[in-house]
Amino acid sequence: MNKDRLREWFDPQKRSLKELRELQHRAVERIDLEDGFDRIETVAGMDCSYIDKNIICAMVILDYATMEVIEKRHAIQEVGLPYIPTYLNFREGCAMASVFLQVSTRPDITIFDSCGINHPIRAGMAAYFGAVMDVPTVGVSKKILCGHAITPVNTGEYHELMQYEEQIGWVLKSNKKSNPIIIAPGNKVSMGSCLEVVQHCLKGYKLPEPTRLAHNYAGEIREELRRKTEESA
Image (cartoon, rainbow, N blue to C red; front, top):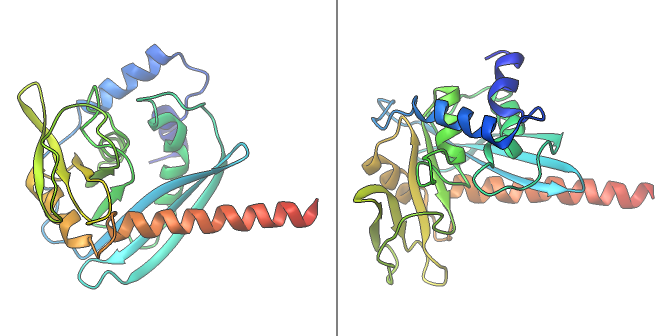
């Protein structure tokens, strides 16, 4: 995808919220909830952090079978939009697309520390990004943005996340000491497969390894930038 197309889909470009919402609706029409892969050999995690007026997007690619890290990439850009609920696509999308296009190993599935179709108009970051980039994606978030579910109590327990009598994801108790996580398909990953993929990637922590490691990596870059700023002050 060329730079002009990326700007069209991810850069707010001083457009109104109504115009950005229309873009989300256009992307949602592209979402495919059938599995768009034959086998999974690699899985990636993406997460963002912030420092001053900049966004840091980190991507970590792992071997799916062993969960060993294959590649790490990051991008640092100026934030183009303040935080506005349900419009995260245009706050983090440019940096995410930039780092995604840098990697030498294109992952079979990418897990986002964000929502998938469990979003008021089905345009969570994982769903929107997956639809625009035409790649398989899954969203894993920490809170229910919309819908309702029975709260799982025991580690490994999960329940359907429902909205208007439609399943939009899962609520999973991934760790004994942590609150449940919310799992949802983004694009080209079925409802059943998104749960299976995340379960496979859990290694005793609250978050699946891809997004946990991406979160840690983004934090490392942030602290490095903060240290350099302090040293130069």
